[in-house]
Length: 317
Image (cartoon, rainbow, N blue to C red; front, top):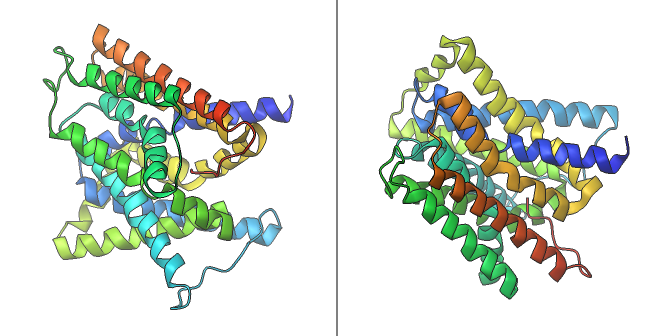
């Protein structure tokens, strides 16, 4: 099997895996609040990635580009690492889980599929990124798909509600820190950058929980059933803790554009698993909405690839 084929397998695996956090989080949220779940998730994630990172360094499999120092001279990088962790990871996860109180997991997954468009929108306003006409049409198509999903008269959520806006805010939280994350990864390395983000996410939400009077003991609800223990392992160890290593592996073999194309499988993954694992209804409008969003996002990435064929883009994940 060639490295390219292995890269595509890894990219497709990540595209499917990253579509399921909102599915595996649902059983856990039966015993704890979304904010406690976020703290548990990133605490497990930074411990997992810390072990992987240190083992990698000790065995020579990984190399540290530069030391991340908590000093005044390095305050800019510390600020952006904290922003990426607390906003780009913590708030992203919290708002997404919170939206599940109002919308279905499949609706959540489709809205999260808009992240690539939102990332380039941030680039348009702050980094002089430019859309082609075809990209703009594809972006409009993606939002039309979401509108079809929201207005489905047979939906369990009875049309548009605050949950859809909360979920969109979640996607925006992740997207607004993408360029900062790329800059930090270039300086410190991708794995080290994610490790620092997870630490800030865990600490930030830990402090928030203390001041909000949240019940930390509810985290023990994870051990109330084998299913919930499996879900937190998938969420904290798999999706957050180690999947980024697979993403880097895929990106090195099929490139940023190829990996980005595979990530368009996220809405499909959310939809399929929500139907089979959570028993969500399959309606014609829901199927149409998912198809419109997935196809629009694939076209969006395809047109971006054509536009930048001569000049590679900066990694934004």
